[in-house]
Length: 424
Ligand SMILES: [Zn+2]
Image (cartoon, rainbow, N blue to C red; front, top):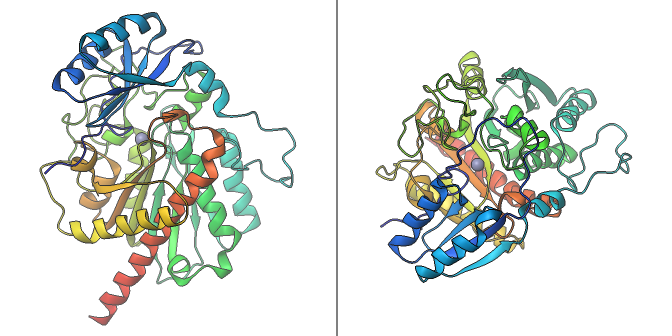
């Protein structure tokens, strides 16, 4: 039986747009949570989305989050009432929410002379990269910054390795910021880095016996674009040869089970999977790093996204069941339980394709199916749609603590599986 049908950041959001050159604003647009309890609702909303009345943010089997364009608030309301659908307003003014997401960091950040990251604010790409280089300079025996490639617009894609240089270490990859507007992702990945480095000597063996590879911002062009042009941008900024629309959904572009199913071959779609697997330099840079470093023994891969509060694992296809489904489900459920016990939010656990929605060509599927990394997970952070992609900065620390619990659970599972293998 299928789990709740949900379409989140990973999934169905069909936004037709061309490449704007001026800052995009959303004055008067509203985010509505619409009851989705009959078959005609979804068809109606898809039609309204195609007619540019609204933009779909997230669909579940019970509700739909849709941003209603300000010119059509009354028309959409009337159409919903005609279909006996109820809704409530989550965000009264999307532009106001955008303006309030991130209070401007002060110029002088207390106690941070050498870097600007605070985890009280969302920081731009330069601040994030400066922090990685600060760590390399301050902890040269532990930290190394590696540029694994360049983006479409030639921005470096930077990776931070944390390693005690134990030659027996296995390796864990943590991917952030593949979807541009999910600002909580780079913020939480850098927070995890900060937590591990702050107390590295006292960390348990399951942390120190792994080499950690963090890419906080895998989509640096898109991330920059959300600061300079469109806060709600999702894809990279690659130009199309066949369309005026720009951007490829990088989490549909990986070279395992790549398809236009659960994604799109339309360059204007927010789910456009690209011309071919690894057509984009951002995804290809990770694949090349794996190919060029055959001695690294990968055992874990975690992709950090928002929103919807899910801990999910392969496959993206709803028609396939992974062989160690129960083990991965138990691991995710253990993390979800510990997150609750730690005062955090509630997470739904399961395979991507049946817990969320069909998705092909994602990094988590590639890590497991292409690279045979047993512990491959995606976490969709908060929230349920009160703020959606516009999660205020005050949620950075509590959300990041939730990711850190999952990271620790995965690392412990890796250690346990290695011990079991040694016994054999
Ligand atoms: Zn995402």
